[in-house]
Length: 257
Ligand SMILES: Nc1ncnc2c1ncn2[C@@H]1O[C@H](COP(=O)(O)OP(=O)(O)OP(=O)(O)O)[C@@H](O)[C@H]1O
Ligand SMILES: [Mg+2]
Image 1 (cartoon, protein in one colour):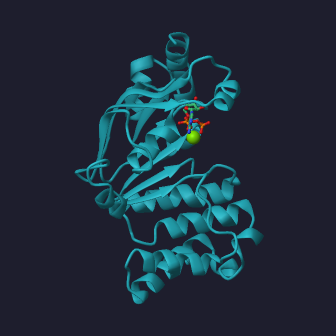
Image 2: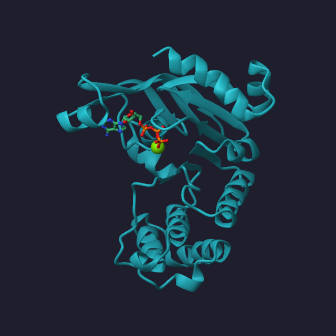
């Protein structure tokens, strides 16, 4: 279970960041009092426009950032008090984390497996399953730097799952992928869910969230605008699809800031 309680994250901005973000404020409230809950056996979608605070929220869940206020717990462990316990339970995938370009997918998989203290037999079994599923065998010995975007993403996903984590946190996992590769990834997330894992993904692709997610949290300007199943969100807004519902909330929450 992931419990995000009244999470606020404030970044301090340097002069360059202030210029980039076209602001005179020296701080940026990226996440503003967000509360959400995600449970094992479900795919939770964090939906929001660019700059909404999705990555910041997921980084707090993954122990990479400390909350300014509020708290986050994963599988009962607080991300600040027991970050090591949290890290044992999670897989975190984000566009900013890259595999070392000099090494091959197979090498990286084995390396991270051993780093996690997993025995070689189990590493081999998991590698076979994941490399089979994602079609990685064909390029398993090539250097990461020689791979296409899709190949790199598949390798990064496989490596992130080496320790068979209970909680899978994927930040825009289908970003930059063609529809065939993207479908392979979302289908695998469904397999993980069927195995009882908790999967939390961020996306701004409405159709993906509609098809994939059991529950959806919409965040706009750092604030939670809505949370629920697709049907609940549609009922709350009277909209006929998620995109229309999203724009209803967008009008409301974008204006208010
Ligand atoms: N390290 C940082 N320092 C300062 N400001 C930051 C930092 N990271 C993010 N921000 C700002 O915080 C806000 C939220 O960013 P975040 O990356 O969480 O959004 P996002 O929803 O993931 O957006 P996207 O869809 O573009 O990935 C943005 O205004 C961003 O400019
Ligand atoms: Mg992001």
